[in-house]
Length: 100
Ligand SMILES: [Ca+2]
Ligand SMILES: [Ca+2]
Image (cartoon, rainbow, N blue to C red; front, side, top):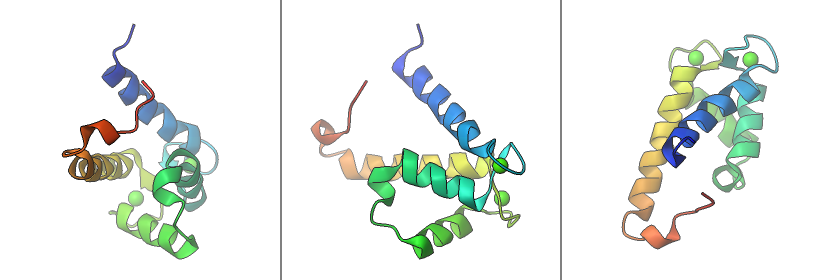
């Protein structure tokens, strides 16, 4: 039985591939694939975002400017979100979203 952290790592990898495999390069997220991932898997973070915001996020994440987000670029994004969550929640651990 995988521990919660092991499960979380598996979910991060599986989520990337669930979206990256929909069109074009199956190991990279196109703009549309990234948009689907952000809106469906991170609704709390993206519900206030408009199309322009999503385009900006794509620009920030695509550090090698090939118009796709590869796994490394995605993980840098996930790590950044984790750091934001840590800063936000470190003084309020009881407010962390939990469903594990
Ligand atoms: Ca793809
Ligand atoms: Ca890229």
